[in-house]
Image (cartoon, rainbow, N blue to C red):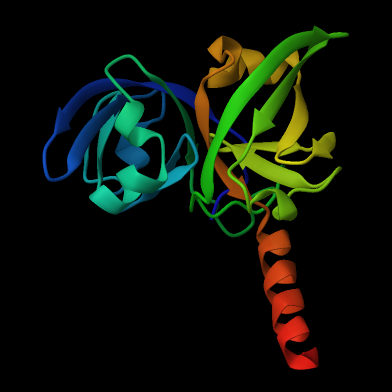
Length: 200
């Protein structure tokens, strides 16, 4: 479990494609404190640390993960938003994030707005019903508040701190990001669907 508060902006250091994609990610984390098997959110995708060395850790992505996320588009040098898993007693500064990607959102607009930057995203049809104004989403692992929703598009504002500390600083229209809908929205939709089936 994660919070969507990014604690390091790492980069893909090495990448090998095969039956699995093996990734080594450069990080400012103290990797001596990352046990093998630890869960780390890598741009919103929960991955397992399979090796560590000073200033880097390695993870693997399966075909299923590649099919559901943007990891297949990563290359050496790609910036990666990083967050270690939540510990009992840690401050929940964002919202509950599982690291299970629901779909890919595409940036369709980026423009300055006052002292922040407004991003507009488009999501695959069907996911828009889980996104509501003032609700939460995670984009590449970043916990964000939705400003407005119009059909399959929604907008968020990114403050200067987030631009400086995440991959949003270099993100441009056309780029795709891992989207995780709000955990509560997921269960509310499930319960409403079950209730509708009972009534019918």
